[in-house]
Length: 393
Image (cartoon, rainbow, N blue to C red):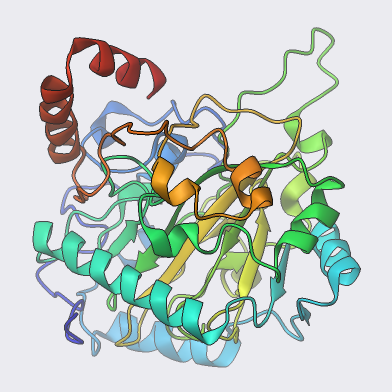
């Protein structure tokens, strides 16, 4: 992968010259259905449609290192970025890690990946970045939460919607460094894998994502209106693995502590206080595990460095939680390489022996291209396979 990717001055802030400023009263949109039609062309994931209006703060900037707005933002981040005295754990501190997770809605665990796994997964992410940029050379299409340019989702860019057809992702499903912590967080070893993907920010990703939750659930039916998912135990845990050290400059993830159970509306980018923009997990060493409650408010931040910031992930569901978004995205042959525990927790995403994982191996940030590939593949596999795939999607 070339080290010169990103910083494309021809790509305007937020990616579309006519993309309007953020005008929504709140970014909290559990169903992802309230985005006005004028954002319909913005490529993003359904649960993040409410972020499609983009970042109003950088309107009028150019995507250049020396743009005055970028220069001022870089100095602000240098002085302020990062959660003061961010508490981290080592893999042997299982109960402490679980305690911090339940308190804050996230925890950073250092040394989660050994040198071999980190190197292998880093090479895999670099290959996927090359595939994405082959389809989107100027990095203008973007994707993932909010559809911002220079920022992509590893999962959404795959026609299978996940990366579990990649052995390097499968290799981090069940780790001695993270499995005991997941078991402590869920209070059980009976959690299940829901998928795997992650995100990346190229150099020159000057926009903030709006704060959001990764709401992949439907609120429980409560006739008296006393119960929401935020009042329940954690339903979904995501583990992100930074491929490079997260610094104040290269787009570290931001997390707002304690918001996993908040019933308050999530503030807009224009309305949030500055400290929330600086509430980032930096410095965090490469190969750490960033273990997140999906309900906790978070977002991507500007990558003003010259490095690609990648954070592949695996998603885990509580023993009591299920989602229609679970697809058979893990090839049977790869599933058999897992430990007995890994196979058991991955059983719902594993394909059958001999089954073709539809969409696996095709990468594009554009949904029309992914859909065309899947439709052609389904046509080859037959009407019965196609009907079953689209019913599950």
